[in-house]
Amino acid sequence: MTPYDCLYPPIEPYSQHSLQVDATHTLHVEECGNPNGTPVLFIHGGPGGGYSAIHRQFFNPDSYRIVLFDQRGCGRSRPHACLTNNTTAHLIEDIEKIRRHLQIDKWALFGGSWGSTLALLYAQAYPERVSGMILRGIFLCRKTDLHWFYQQGADRIYPDFWQDYIAPIPVEKRHDLIAAYHEVLTGTDEIARMRAAEAWSVWEGRTSTLQPDPNLINHFGDPFHALAMARIECHYFYHEAFIEEAQILHNAAVIQHIPTTIIHGRYDMVCPVNQAFDLAERLPNAKLVICHHAGHSAFEREICEALLQATDDFVNVGGVE
Image (tube, rainbow, N blue to C red; front, side, top):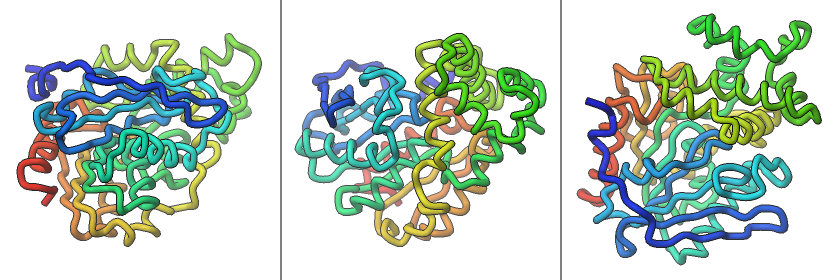
């Protein structure tokens, strides 16, 4: 059995949009499922990860009006891997522009990893537009969260994979790996840039599941995906996600009333589970689900089943309990 057994069957979009959000960026947006269903926005990770067709399958297509989009610079949005005017504030306003363009009054937010970060920040900016949240692999983007995965912490769990991650960076620059990667990924040496992009992206792919997933690792290593993922992630993390330290936690009171389910793998090495606990403490009405046999990926079976249960519960009982 595979995690995909628990997903809804594959579907195709009934509408696709190219939404120009400024002079530089055009976003790819799609709608699928039931045009009269409960609106839900799928917010992908990264930043820079893009969405895939399989992400449509987390939702009952008879019950949901499913909206998916590629954030600035990734997937089918253009220009590819572009860092110009690519900040968290821009992405928050992009989501609001999509909502207005589609004439949706309120929608649920579904996001994991960076998708949870952006969902929380959008909800804090526009709480009146959010009917509920289903969040997975909470990523608060604090300095300690970034340091764990990109400097010191996860390397103790994956010392073998770590060697490949640090390989593109000269020894004398390894004291600040995010800054060193930023220099290469924004540099003019295309060969060095692509080598660094692959190493950065594959590190995340290798560490996202309890058991190695060759298909996931290959996806993260694909040059088109890796370039956007690495350049955009590193750009954001070099600038500490363009938010204040612990901003999400400090502003949590604004969204306490929004029905929220938090799903997190006990052995998540990309975004350790303490982040989910820290958030849940600030959202006392949220439901926290710890998956005891899972890491970071949405496609590990226990997490996959929990996400499906959450999306079904949201439409079946009128909200997340």
